[in-house]
Image (cartoon, rainbow, N blue to C red; front, side, top):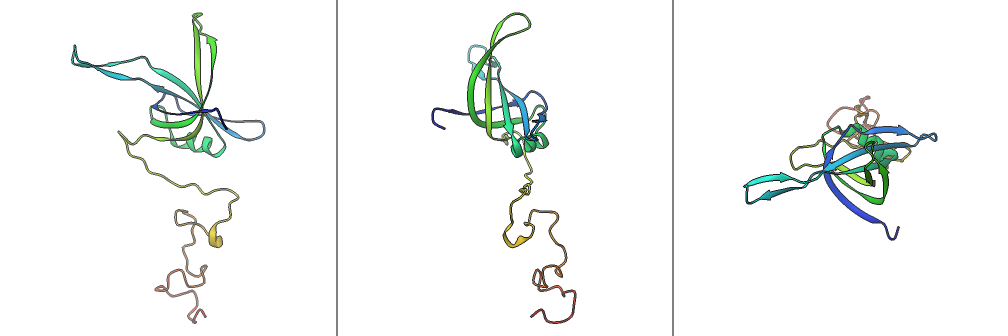
Length: 164
């Protein structure tokens, strides 16, 4: 949509993702991402932390479920999404504050200080090419008998006759 501000932030999750479902059964997850800028002070020859910026991020549907299954508190993440207008509120001490909110388009672990293993999820309701499971699916048929003897020609088929 025109006029939306797309941003990318890098930070750490403050809490475990909070997965909920709407009354209509649509998954929604909320995460808080904190980003603290660091600068090098040449006078003291030391790194100094700036003020932490907190952003409340929201994802919907399959993305929400994937976030809840994959990320945990403290995970360093890269988040891209649409920035929403800040909402103003008062803290418990009566201080005026504003909250930054981001609707997540893409999110993933940062690989700067960690590694990740990606597992592709099968799409629900999507017809697969050839009608079978993909090579990443653990439920792929193991027997070449179900594939008509052509899945692995070096292995004998269920029957000893020629498959054509």
